[in-house]
Structure formats: C-alpha cells, structure tokens
Length: 305
Ligand code: CO
Ligand code: CO
Ligand code: CO
Image (cartoon, rainbow, N blue to C red; front, side, top):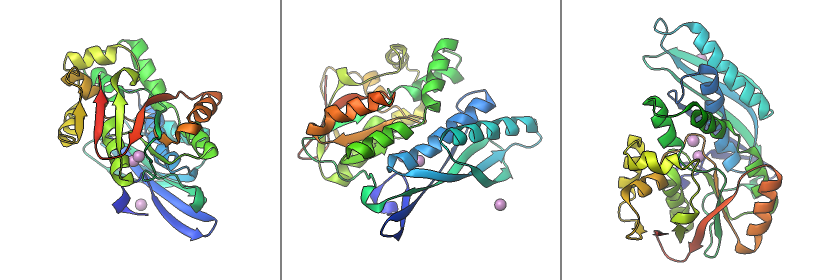
C-alpha cells in the first residue's frame, strides 16, 4: 500500500502472515518544555502505526537542531522524552539522524508489524456504520493559545495529557472487535481525515455538532475569539463544497471541526451492531469513545446543528 490510498502508513507484505508497516512524522515544537515535546512527537509518530491496527517494533529519531542558538542539553531532553514514550509503547529507539537546522524539528520513523488480513485501512467504511472518535478535539486551538500565552496552566496540562496519550489501546480495541475503517485525526482535522476515509470508501457521512467532543468549553470560546491556527482555516477552505452545513452552525464552530490535531485520537468506522461492544472495550481499556455520526450512501459530509 502506498500513496494512492491516503492511508496512515506504508505497508509492505513479507509473507502471508506478516507485513511491515512504516511511517515517518516530525514537526516543530508545540510546547515550550523540551522533554514534553519529545513525548508528544513520539506519541504522534507512533499513532500512524496504531491507526493501521499494527504493532510497533522499533523506531529511529530524526532531529533538526539549531546548533549554537540553543544549548545542546535541550536536544538531550527532547530525545529523553522520545525514548520514554517509545518505552511506554514497548519499543526501542535503535538509531536516527540529526542535522544542523535553522528551526528545531523532531520526530520518528516508526516500523511496525501486522497480519496482512487484519490491517485497518481508511477505505472500508460502509453505509450504516457508526463513526467513533477516541480523543476530544481542540488540540490545535489550545496549542495556538499556548503560543500566544492565553492558556491557564491547568488547560495546558489537559492539552499535554491528551497529546502524550498513546493510541495503542484504542487500536487494540478496534482490532479485537473488528471494524470497517480506521485512521487517526491529525493535521487535516476531524473533517479532513473523515473526508479522506469517505472518498477512499465511496460513501458519505452525517455528523451532529452536539455530539462533537472538545477538550474543554474554552475551545469553543477561543475559536469564537479568532484564536485559531492558520492550518484550521486552510483545512476548512480545502473542504469547500464537500460539506453541507446546517445554517445555524457558525464559522468558529466549523473551525473547531477542522482544527488540526497533534497526536489526535482514532476515527473508527464500525458496523452499527458492533458499536456498543467497541465502546465497552474502549472504556474497559481506559480510552474515551464518542459516537460523532454515521456513514451513509452517497458523497460528502452533512453536519447537523
Ligand atoms: Co495518520
Ligand atoms: Co502521519
Ligand atoms: Co545518518
């Protein structure tokens, strides 16, 4: 599996029982603390392996560092964060590559393994499926507010807790129950990643605004005040014409639904009859689960007010 499917990772079949799954993800800091940044970058990179229903086996570091501008101990702290998160995922970091860079960047190449018959892709969604999300939205808006110093320490902690949470258990629950499609919600936001899933699957979806979970009420307020990252505005523009909005829905509410997530949750399309069992399993594993809408025949996304 390669570029054509907009899936989360590349898949290369070794033999009938095993396929290698590989992904790379890196970005500039979303928080000030270097150790925390390392944790977030690693959780985010691992997420694409989990979104494929695969198990990670090892990782490599990628780091671009402004040598001379920042003390080297910052690099050490970032790498320590990455190592600790990889350890939590049960994998070693076996190497990597660093370059001198004008802007700090960090991430990982993660290699995983999966039974080819059990891969979760984004193309199997079927009309009648329920759409289940495993982390609330608003991370992009909250990290944007952190950069502008608009967020209280408690809310920063909430955003960090969400971004550093692994999608391992959500993935395990989805694989055990057997779901039709799965992806993780990252840079393109809920609507962008849902749109990719629907286009790959050849169907449409109906979402309900009142069922959309956000990290805290402040997410709606910040969006209302225009504290939104540029990426969210691009995401919304990109989807122009593909979404039918209820006329009651405001632009700031639309921007929450297109908010880019760093290390967001999984978006799972599951048969209606299995939905309750999936939610129970996710909750048993200590993972949140929100039914945000359903898959329908046709094309595009309809959002009810
Ligand atoms: Co992804
Ligand atoms: Co990715
Ligand atoms: Co090298």
